[in-house]
Length: 148
Image (cartoon, rainbow, N blue to C red; front, side):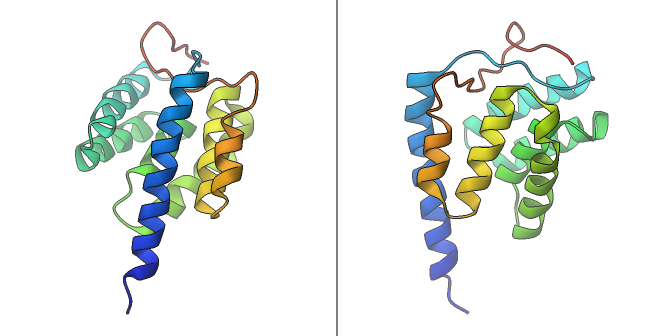
């Protein structure tokens, strides 16, 4: 069993998120979170802080707690996919997020579509998805978040 395909996938994903980080700085606007649970929102915000600091296992636990509070929280599923420890969890959470994308804010939908395109090895499409003129990249903080 060769690790080269896994390595190339990880490298491609890493490069994608480096570019996303650059793009976020250029196009960032506030984006509401679509959830009915204050607790789920709090867990997501705390989990994202850990995720941004490369503490994926701890972040993953908070994303799971967010999903226990609101199983339909698309962004918690998306971050559950991004922090997944294995391919099965990645596919499970990304599929749920994609299935929920019609019920979320534009910013959340664009982020979900971008991650989905990248997972389908369409990196340029993923980056272009983030360059849509009126993009709403996720700036998660208490003042930017609103409950649905």
